[in-house]
Length: 325
Image (cartoon, rainbow, N blue to C red):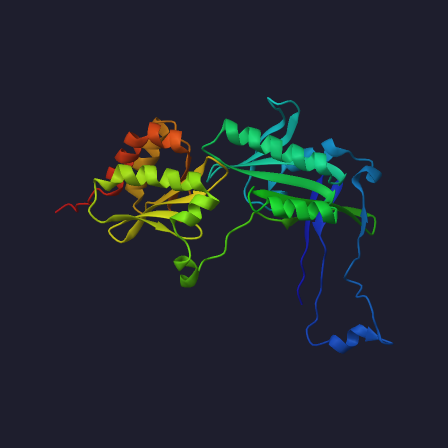
């Protein structure tokens, strides 16, 4: 028997999971006169629209802002609400994932999403991304319903823009009202390439697909080339890597033009802390993930401006660790 139950009181509404009991091995007992009979323990909910429940969009915003984790996007914290935009209008909610410095621009809409909701979400996401280019940003749309046409549009856009679509459902179950959030579109992650795919990718491929990423990679490669005997550029479907002594030392992933994501791995904790301090001193935004990889959003101008800092980081990474005798 499995029993799942969770309850959370928010502004007079009950946000909860349904209680489900499952009896293994009693399959035939669930049939009666050729029809499935409903177990008393399973409650069926009826969807109601939030406006019909006497609530408005600001009510839904407040719930999300006060408890961002209910979106299911991780341990997010609230940063700002109704944030004024330079282009006009206000961003509904700005959220942040502190450990990796990820930003989520959230636009909320009651009822069904429409073109203005999609355009507004992308516009505000782009505004924040331009304002804080060193951070990774995600565009989040929340609505009660997604028309099939707009669902397909959002899905296509998510191939190039990190978009997430979340459906908010208000259910009525035996007099209780239950609020639930379901992620229906997630950010696109490229599949792992196999050896056959790797052989089909070269510099020309990247010059067609993302020439700015190739330019950024070659800028750093040219800077490091004189410092190493065994150094070369390697092109795959997912990234361009600078290979030093047979290992991926740095790799570049495609982002919106003219930006690329520069990655490098630092497993040694002491070296990682020294690099974090160096980046903070130069006011360069970065993420350091659970795989012990640094990620910095760069463009050609940023690279040229910070080549000396990158060289200092390169020296820290390649410093030999000498054990005390």
